[in-house]
Length: 185
Image 1 (cartoon, rainbow, N blue to C red):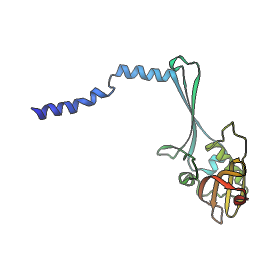
Image 2 (image 1 turned 90 degrees about the horizontal axis):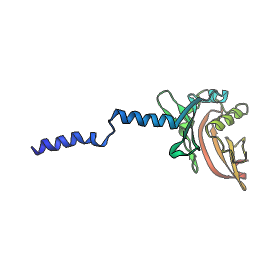
Image 3 (image 1 turned 180 degrees about the vertical axis):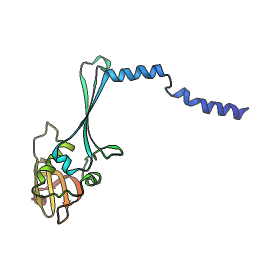
Image 4 (image 1 turned 90 degrees about the vertical axis):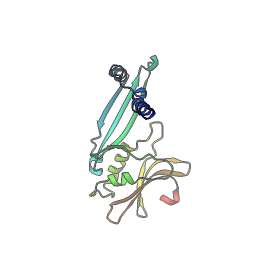
């Protein structure tokens, strides 16, 4: 009898803790639909299409009228759809290797003086610079590496360091938070 009672409690307990009432679920879904809007915009820039092998989307999600507030809260995401799953690009922190981004680059893409402006545009789409920051963007090639600078503080710079093979194929991408003027130019 104890075994039967324990089995009945274990099998019945998920229903106690879960939301199974379809009417409540419908009301909650309606609340979310009235309060939130989500837009998916495929980025069709020539630079993105010629450098990356997957589609990139800009997602904007707005939440409004929660708790009677008249303000809208907006969240934006830049994601890549590899055909199997959607993922955000790697988050940049201190010194950050970016192996996923490196793997998203088309096999036939060559980074050189002609294609570098397109790579800068790609970076602007997938790692946009905050509007409040001054524009410190520049790019150059030195010592077998491309540098796409995004920000500067005093005498240090930060940005993307791209290693290429002798033919210009990208072999490694990382974000460096700091390097000295003498290191990069």
